[in-house]
Image 1 (cartoon, rainbow over the protein chains, first blue to last red):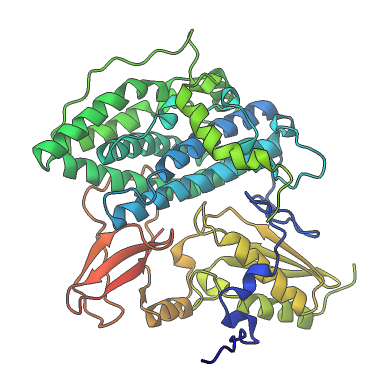
Image 2: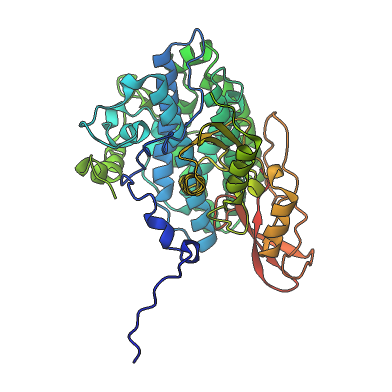
Length: 318
Length: 171
């Protein structure tokens, strides 16, 4: 038996593995800056100056809200990876999670650049970039996402309704955010609109398919809609930070997106012959909701899973 | 600052334009429209501007590394890769050479991207596209899924030759 081990071809591009060790100083949950240039900063070279007359802390907190919505929702959808009913939908949901994760990364980086004081302090020498510090080193009560994003997953009908409601709402916001006075938010929105349009169409088509499918698919869809509906109104509440961001021309007041979002949703409901749910809204805790940092236990569990390795190795590289 | 010769700028451009996309290796970053600008700003100092395809494109770090590596190998000691977010990348930036390379590799190139800054209409029926099979050139194709092996692709199948294939989505 010939025991000679084949050595890789000399041209490094001939082996799919050879390129992996070129820049190998990567932190486990992102990448470290290279000595010259801007490293892996997702906003490298982008002008992150806070627009005139805008409160930097308001802009940062507003970007954090939009970023946290995307990050938490992305994590929930990513839990479908390898669990969807078929391969195509597994890939679709993974793609949706990936788009949202990309939006989250840009938005958290934008938040950190606007007001560095919001970034958790890490040990000296930590290679963790600011957007990762925000994602992995904040407690649940510092997360500003809407509670809708953190709910525990249900069945595939629930995923369909969840993505439909979330993307319909977020797309209505991003359509308006394209006109933000903050150039970074405007650019993130311009890109995000194209992605969210695919998410909304995907989930709307599945919504109609399930609504008009079998008795069982319709039963499950209606149950999912009823279960998620109590948190729909909260998406259109205006938090003081959102009001301030909208007032200075960098953000969108969620209340102003309601008619557009409801209009789209009504089209989908009509196509599926589904009546509007009547479940009352879920109240906050002493008036506080997700935007105030008030969350349910599911977010703590989600963060425990998402953050545990990063927190165990704040100086880790791979 | 010392004036940079035209030859040096041209050489930097040539090197950067050779770098290929990690996920679509039949395409250069220039053909993909991701490479926006290459500028020699000083002695051995190059500034490269790239625009991400999708917000979550996981290939961005590799693109950046590849550009830095190739330009350094060509003698440019300081390579700065900047992100240009505006205007957003569109498939309309894929060059004719890039479209031919995609088709030759069995990937259906994108049609014209939808335009407009207004509200995005809801589309409950599959997106209408004139997609021809990159294998047998038949126009008889059907959508399998709007999401494919990478963020930028949809999955189709040809009903003539039965081959499944990727289609680059118009954005």
